[in-house]
Image (cartoon, rainbow, N blue to C red; front, side):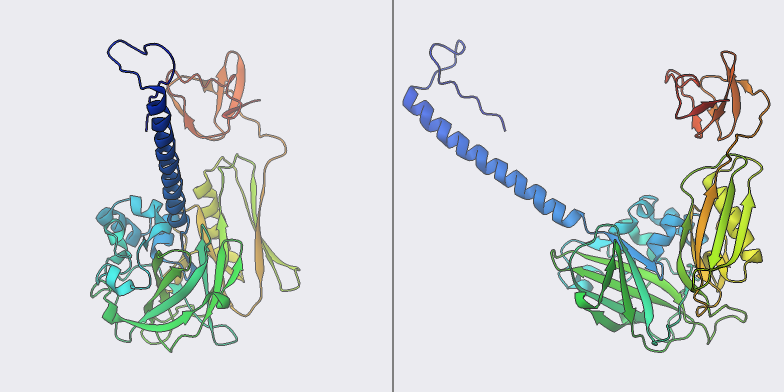
Length: 405
């Protein structure tokens, strides 16, 4: 909004008529009021936009389809979802919502678009497939089921409503309809335990066997907005294939935040309920490794040797190590063992000896740990990158990319 007023003396410009002083002052008052109103309106619009933009999240246990595909996009079901609905869905995993739901969930989320929360962008999560990764789901000692929600932006809750697929439902027959679901519980805010950005609840669920979908609806109290998610679960028994580890319990995650140089050591330590060491799974890197590679190595070794933990993604009752993942779930092999874990990364105190590297060249791509020579000195690459022509990222001038050795 641009306002031009001239209440001075003399012509402003040839052809522009000046206001007399009285008219000018009246116009100035009207303009100031209009400007103030416009400013207030803009501010209120921004505030209202913020109130609906900041409430996001998805279930982390049992993990939802959208969150699992964000963490592990290489899973077959996630690849199919991306091919059908587009890749943006996994980047917007915490926004499967309806802004004006206001409790009228069946009105704003139609049949066959239930896992997508009624949004076209997320339609891949509604594909009828038998290979959606399912969480082995069993009750605790109190007979209730734990449910954890990763709220990337916590907000006041009006209620949480949970639905389970009915007996006889098949994951491969059709996308979900409301008639496939049975409301099994609704919780108020007083029944939710909040720790940081994690909401934890205890659910009383009816008896089920085999694979099902737990559908959750989070209705905000400070907005009409609601969030939706499909979590695939396996209750065991029934048609569950023989050998399915029904006693698995997901207790957390491990993640890889950075690539590691040669000589690094990754340790997965397991403790009993008193905090005493039970075992340590260790991997030493003889060569530099990207974050997905070294995380895959420690997960594979844990699954082969640990007497307490499994690391990876649950598929068909078995914990597998997904390719390319930088975040993986950790499961107790015995839900009642009370074991806990911690992952330590130890970087080499002395950089490993490297032979003289090739000459650094602008326009080339470099990997972590690679050694190059530049102006008579040797440098080791700290971050994988491409030295784009004209960027000036020489080893001598880019300490975040290169380390002199």
